Length: 426
Image (tube, rainbow, N blue to C red; front, side, top):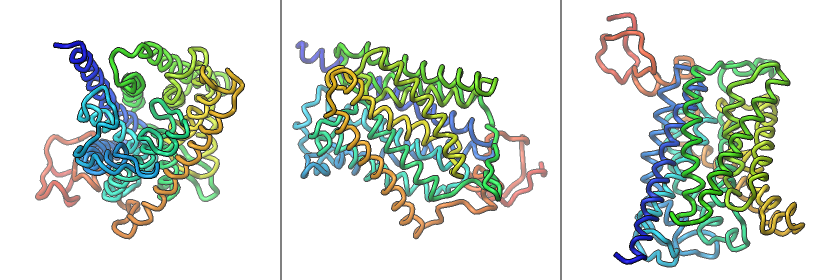
């Protein structure tokens, strides 16, 4: 075997392995969100993640990948690569097209899962399926083409190594639009606007979900090198760890000294905010910059959480503070701390201006297309669950009798996929 063949083989193993790590993050999303919401909606959370993995994967294969990485048309969209057909040699990949697609498919699944958490416990399941189709065929792939597929932002020099902007800021602002459109959960805010607390159903479960996300993030960031021999892999991995640790530590100490208790959900989301914050710059900034990025991401996440509550916006898992706000900070931090042309390092403003432009465009695109998408979906199916469905719980309402935690070994029923059964009848 030639040296080229060995290198290609190593690159393929590396990218497939890191793609699998990113896919495992869906288990993290599932456990994190299920732990943060009430028991009666745990199965619904899991089923939405399966929508992301199944429907999202197929949509990206059929349409999304071509729009994102196909041959560029005027810097706006790709024009081939649908169903992975057509000549994609212009991408100049160190791996096969199939391997590259697998890695990118894992990314698109993560984007839609961000929105899932923001609308937890009250979105109509059919409406969520339709929105997942929209996100994975249109919203994310077109924005991805602008930034990574040779589109106009890419041509301007916009830098986003693994997705603080195109994945997290876009996904976070999409989540904000969805939460605003669908409204808060019943009982979340009183008539005078006072926020009430819906206690998480299982914080140990949520913490395991966060650990899985943290683990998968090494694949997210380091895997974006696409080559197993890239000398930056170790540096990227260290920065990922440092930023996550500093984000979590900031939330831990902040809540400890401000409230005299260390708040578990804040610490969990603080670590995730640190991960989001370093995702754009993990290949471009120094170790100390990564720590500072994580600290500020953790603080911004907590301030944004309070900001949402004060304005009557219901985000059960903190999707917008973690992904939207930290995505903003992570994208801008490249323009501030990049060792090549960051403002604080070189005194040059040019890159920061490009980063700001890209960030504004991606955020507006995600928010606007999501809002408009739900307006269209509303013509097909109700976007929100009914009051009765929400009160009963989406597990029973949309998934038969499959509650997350069963109290009975056997029950009598004629049709397991209706609600016409007596739970006290054995």
